[in-house]
Image (spheres, rainbow, N blue to C red):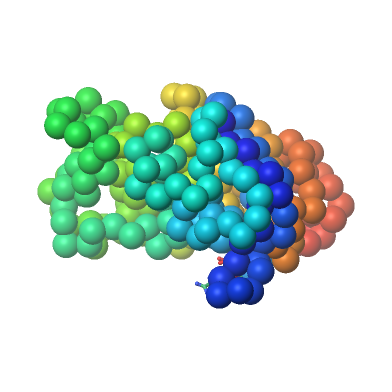
Length: 233
Ligand SMILES: Nc1ncnc2c1ncn2[C@@H]1O[C@H](COP(=O)(O)OP(=O)(O)OP(=O)(O)O)[C@@H](O)[C@H]1O
């Protein structure tokens, strides 16, 4: 579904990512864990076309994805939910969700809207409330819900548990599993390695812009280097 081969990228001539090889298969939850500043967000931005790679190739769903405009990638089913969520604050929950459905053109949005409300019933209850007045957890659900409105094949999620209480974190993590079970692949970036490794079918460890380990989530969680560096054990 998604393949990165030898991908390097950075900002203003400063290289941040070094020759990344990474893949996400259909129906997988894949996590990237790493410390602050390791390049996790930059990796997602490079995949979604917000940062241009300086080397390497990215393919998505059988076609080239590097050098492609972000809006075209969205139309092809590659959706990025950024850290900070980027909601339309003064607009209502329902208006935010409907904006997410722009790729469907003039088709009615009742069906995808119903699916999002089924996944996150709290959003149905709050459908008329301004996005900026939602709690942090509700805003995260809305950001994910808005991406789902486009009918994604792959969701890129940047730190979905940031700022959430433990209970809400589990609500969001359970929703990510439910999304995968509906056939959407997920690439998840998390500083909270315990959560990410627990959830992921496969995971990568990113250190200073290089991928240094790869394996099934639970197996990486048992790796001594991962335990010492990222799980505080
Ligand atoms: N727009 C930018 N211009 C210049 N440098 C940037 C820019 N965005 C990020 N960087 C730098 O790139 C490096 C990687 O940042 P990135 O945000 O990808 O890391 P991260 O692993 O997501 O970190 P965190 O967990 O703290 O969010 C950092 O050194 C950061 O300062």
